[in-house]
Structures are given as structure tokens and as C-alpha cells.
Image 1 (cartoon, rainbow, N blue to C red):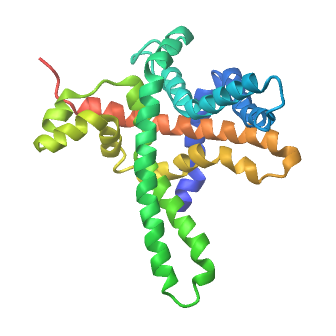
Image 2: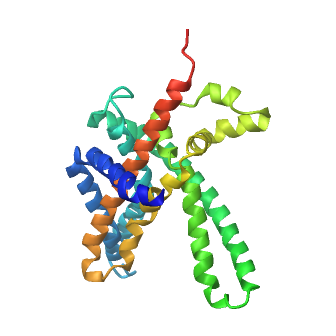
Image 3: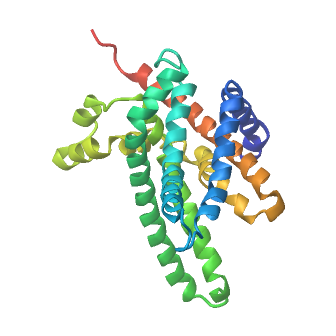
Length: 272
């Protein structure tokens, strides 16, 4: 099954995802170039000393760039959702996508941070448990740090794969009243759905897809960070290419989201 996925499914999914990016290739390349340049701007502005007359402006710009880097992922997610969505879901024009980004970037950021925080807490707990177990085993003390780190990353990405649809749900959907009333049981369940409905919906829709979403979630999260391990003279172009890789993986995630959303709509009884 793994060999079939590598030889047939994986290339097909990347090819279909690239078609989504190719329609706006110039825009995605500009976004990738911007995200590549931002860390270098931080390095230039960060060491400004107290004797520098422009230190106030430099620090203000440094804070602004840091905020942009934090807000960039959910902004990219919302833009991708707006452009990748079918015309039946909504207006795909750039003005409409801009209005969508203004309305939904902050909620997408909050939902993404909540999902990431939950996954991080669980992964850190798993890492602590792995350290405790490996420390008691003979011959593994030298490998405690790398093995526990691998455990933490695996658990974190596995959970984020289950939350991979969160930004798309926030950008394109409204809270499902039927899901709140019928899909949960008890006051606590309804309360959780009201407060964290994108996380609950994503968790439910990715139940049978987690292993297929794992490599793409890994690419979305860690591909841009991999540029830090590249030879410095070629780090900038490598960062640009890895940003494009992460956008392609994001498009694959959206393809899976679209399929699950269509199946969900077909499964719902018609309204009379």
C-alpha cells in the first residue's frame, strides 16, 4: 500500500495541487519571496543599538515584521481557501478574497494557535513519557534526546494533520447548528462545539485521512524551517523553493478538504 501511494497517489495529488497554484503562480511566488525576505529584515533591524538615532523606528518596524511573520500562516491559509474554493462556494475574485482575508484571518489565527497549542501540549507530554521510558533502558541513554524529539515531532504533526482543515473551515463555513445540537451530547459537549467548532469539525472529517494527510501537514509546518539547515550561500533560494513546497502541500490538504466537504453535503438529508 505504501509503495502504491508513493508511485501513484502521491504524484497525482501533487500534480492536481500544482494546478491550483499554477493559476496564480506569480502571486504565490511573490508571497514566497516575501516570506523568504522577512527573516533577513529581522536580522538587519534586530541589532540596532541604543545610540542609533533611528532605533525607535527600527524597533517599530522589527515588531511589525515579527507580527507579520506570526500572522502570515493563517493569512496564507485564508487566501488559499478563497482562491482554491469552487465558484459554487463563493466569489473567487481577488477583491472578494481580500475581503475574506480581512474578515477571517484573525479567527483563523486564533483557531490555528488553539490547535497548535493543544498539539504542542500533548506532544510535550509524549516526549516526557518517552524520556522517562528511554532513560530506564540500557543502551539508549545516548539516544534519549533525538528519539524523544522524534516522538514529539511525530505526535505534534499527527495531531496537526487531524486539525489540517481548521483554517479552511474557518474561512469558508459557518458554525453548524445541527452539529452542535445533534452531533454532541450533554452541556459540556455543546459548549466545546460552540467554542472550538472548527477543531471539532476538522477532527471528525480527518478521522479516516490522518495517515494520508501526515506528509502534507509535515511539509506545511516544517518545510520552510528546513532552509535553516541549508548551506548559507544558497539558503535564500532554498527557502523560496521550500515555501513553494509548503504551498503545494497546502493545496493538497485543501483538495482533501473539498472532497470531505462534498461527501458531507451529499450525506445530509435534503431540506424540504
